Image (cartoon, rainbow, N blue to C red):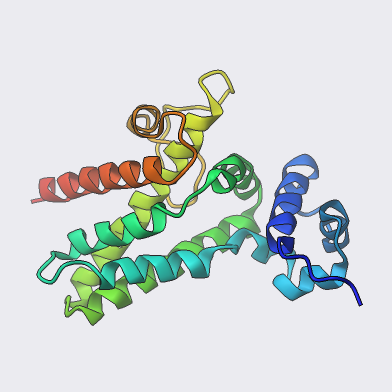
Length: 226
């Protein structure tokens, strides 16, 4: 019987993202992913039902962390303050592993419509988890839904900027575009924030600061709507 590898899931994610960016998502098979990771095809299917789900790795954990942070927010916190607490909880767990794979993940998603749709569903799931946690605090449904969407957008902006800052200024990345919920580019301001906030650190402190800054910008934008 094959030995169960404790880091098998992470190895499969790394292998898949490298293959997706090297030869394309459609051309990559489960067998190739398993072989690149030094594992068996059966090990792949212990962790993922298909190759598309590799891109959703970590979704359940992130959703749980968002919800736990919101639930633990101080009593009387506003909906957005509670979302901020959820962002703090989730972003603080980000590591160099997440950062190093971020650009490959964005490239793979941008190049394939099926992966873009799966990424969108991942974000819908995270927003639903935050909205549920807010409603559990007594936040009205419409307010909870809007605050959750803002939380997901803040996280997306922060992650994109965090990864872009690690890539350096001469890697050909366009830093002048806008961030949307399909991933891809950073909003300009976020890249400068990333350099200031994350410095040389590979942990989640920079992500926390970036997410907080993104949420504050969105809060300001919301106020301008009147």
